[in-house]
Length: 137
Image (cartoon, rainbow, N blue to C red):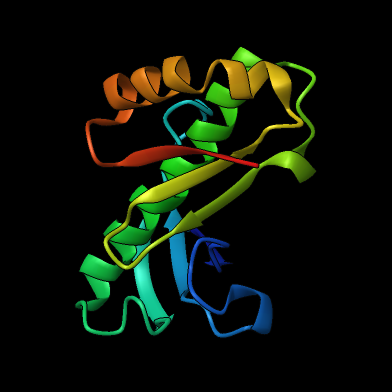
């Protein structure tokens, strides 16, 4: 049947909302039928955001996959701590050093009270200096 191609524009890149983020073409092996084994691979870089522009095409892709995966897994971590959390309450940013910062407003009392536990869990899950949990007032 052949390989399947798709354009991927990760929401973790600078300028994503304005259409200025990275854009990659990914390829999937259509012969693989096990959904757990289907993994996209880098095929082509269409453009890089200003945060990733100095990286080679392949390095930019690898960094963006890591950033985006970590952001998505961190959302799942927060949901484990508070299943009632709404996606609109997931306030995050990724800096030029790939540090994911998650802001937890005090009005989210359950998460705010567990912020130290969430930080410890993230340090174990992702490694130190990969995710920072910050409470806001």
